[in-house]
Length: 380
Image 1 (spheres, rainbow, N blue to C red):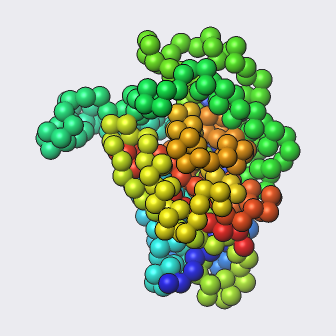
Image 2 (cartoon, rainbow, N blue to C red):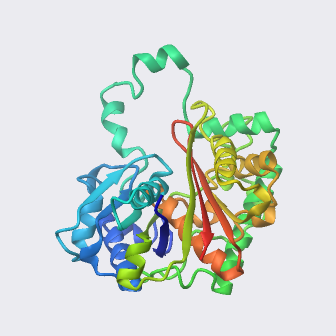
């Protein structure tokens, strides 16, 4: 099987839902990172064979195949096609999987994996509003026969995880505080400077709260009475875009590219859709087994902090070193622009491996429907 290499990775700052990036059209958000990764790598844009873009709420300005619109909005060659995909929160990580698989299969040499989400302009769930407005089921008869009429939501799933693993509110808040502190330290130390392409006057991630405290978190109301969850222990509604260029060995030589990482393993797993957020655990076990690695071999992990119980349960079940997990903070502090987060995390992961000299990195995230992607890379 052919090798696939990451040769470029870039992201916008992650903006808040009411920040400066919220006024930027999603196509222009995507255009910014696509153009940036082409310029940074020096690759001939006409040599790119496909642009695969993750986007979850494909409605309004995020409809009509955003990948194609973003590429053309960047002034890049009309000869390059684009496709927009939805694997919920893992959409752009799945875009990276498809891109790498195209290269590893030998059918493609240069593919751009990317993601965009402007949750300030297109609210989460905007693409399902038609069903809601017209009293239509989102799931259908077969689903109802299998799972009944119980509530299916990420919020309930996170609470069910708290109950299963015995997490209490104070533990969740301690984890959230650490996420903000790690992110604040990373920003001040300049760890993100090389990977971020400023846009609309925004140069740094906007959601980080370096002055938050456990006392402030304790004053928030739970999402529901008797629940452990509050807004402080959940990922933020955000705006952002990201792009990763995947190349074959032949393309690396032909275009004079510099490999940053080699793709080692691509895995997918489904789990209980009611719990919804637990699949990173079995997905990681599968990926490690297929790669012939142990969790101790992984120098850096990026796991999406959709809710604090997700990384906490993953760390507990895998026996991972917490210091190696989200070392520069996660989505609780930095935000979660749904379709963009997958390649945001990969951009962070590649850069952290190079900054620290680590060998192996692992990325995973929970996804709607009870799914998870896992990507293992090796620094080059």
